[in-house]
Length: 216
Length: 38
Image (tube, rainbow over all chains, first blue to last red; front, top):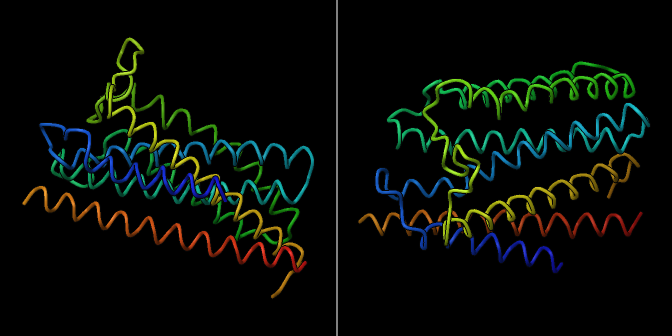
């Protein structure tokens, strides 16, 4: 309960601080505050895909149903946070680049990721038999994750992009944020990560109840 | 006007967050009850 209260305090403070304390960027004004929510959402999506891949590898090695649950729940949360990052990014793009969708490398990459992980759930619903479904989904999740580093980290840096490349780390590898901006951004990363952990563990507990056929 | 809309967005975001938090707390409590019954 203490951790939940702490999460509530940190997230509430982050929301208030993001809208009140850091000075808005001169070029686009208050819309620049979306940054404090957009990047942590994308970070949590990548984290969720890492967890899904690790759980899938574990399932293939040990064949424990709980690992299949972990992979599935994490992929679902990754998809949810990817959608949130896409929506907040589109709003940001409308203000910054005058269009919701610009086929920017990052936008195209996250669209491909959404399709890849959408196909993961299509695969799960198309295969009958628990063990066969879990095995195929685990293999698919491992291969799906191979695309994540390329789509999230490599392609947006190799191809010319509308996204600023020095908003967090500059070309010499130094952290570009300072003061209140860095503090709000750090708190937002921590709060979104905490929210992901809570949603993930809660959904896993519900999966555990479902697996034992518990009915109220 | 710009400040007013900024605070409006802040209020809406806070309402959404409190809604999500309350929903998760209620779901957590219900799950705990079911786990204890098991």
